[in-house]
Amino acid sequence: MSDTIKKIGLIGWPIAHSLSPVMHNAAFDSLGLDYHYTLLPTKPDDLETLLTNFASRGFVGGNITMPHKQAVMSYLDEISEDARSIGAVNTIHVQDGKMIGHNTDWVGFLNALLEARHNPAGMNVAILGAGGAARAAIFALAGAGVAQIIVINRTVSRGEQLTDEMARVFPACQITFQPLEPETLQAVPNDVDLVVNATSVGMEPQDGLSVWPDQIPIPTKAIYYDVIYKPSQTHFLQRAEAAGRPTLNGVGMVVHQGVAGFKIWTGKEPPVETMWQSVLDVLGTAKNDE
Ligand code: NAP
Image (tube, rainbow, N blue to C red):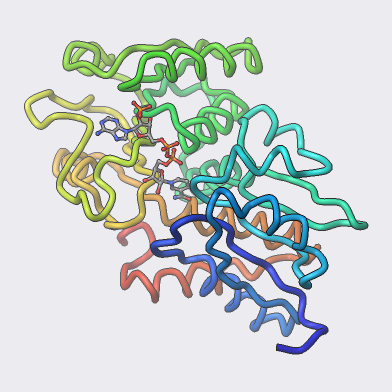
């Protein structure tokens, strides 16, 4: 590879599958930019060394994935305010010799929802999960002016901590916590506007599973959004679609977090349609399962 190529790396362990190299390299090629996106599988013990030598190896930016999204924060020179509030960094940029951390997952979550023509302002929302994806989703939705969020999670301490932190950042939004139990799912108001699965339940290779048990009815007026993109339609979304409800999978979130990252690294307007198409080609699905 030529020395003039600016490298972008995906840092995670293990990196089972990722749409990012195909998506970003298609975008760089389409604009004729001298950038190349590559995988950097990195064990937790090797993270510090990798980041210390990152810029000298020709890397100008990167994405951070599991399990490093929190750990990376100790090795950065600056962290954007949104990443700090969410408590996770998924995008880094080397700027004027400094390593700067950003979070574009929340941007991806929100822009995918808006692109599907669902404006969350004023909505009442139920979110299943309290991990990194849930944090990004809550930050996005509360910032976009939803009225209420019920956070539902298996591990109570994690759910309560997230709820407390987000309620402090967004005092105008009513954010409450419920443990993941059949009774709490049953008690989710039937007229809730949006139900988000931000857990990893239903993701390959656990296709067919859902955190919302089949015997518990689902709210009948909601939009259903699953952050999982593989499979493209989880059991959670299949049930919603069978009930005639609008559904959205996690592909748009991947694309739009990438769009935001591309802008940070290159300063250029990203070729959004090229990025979408490259991802759909890999997955063999249509946009929003049209
Ligand atoms: P994470 O931080 O590890 O959180 C996982 C969440 O799933 C936690 O709330 C966990 O509950 C819950 N969970 C896991 N197994 C469960 C089970 N058997 N029953 C009930 N709850 C369970 O992971 P994450 O980073 O938030 O990722 C979550 C999902 O989002 C993954 O599938 C990931 O691929 C996806 N994601 C998608 C995008 C995108 O761009 N589309 C971006 C980021 C993540 P506990 O707290 O009780 O453990």
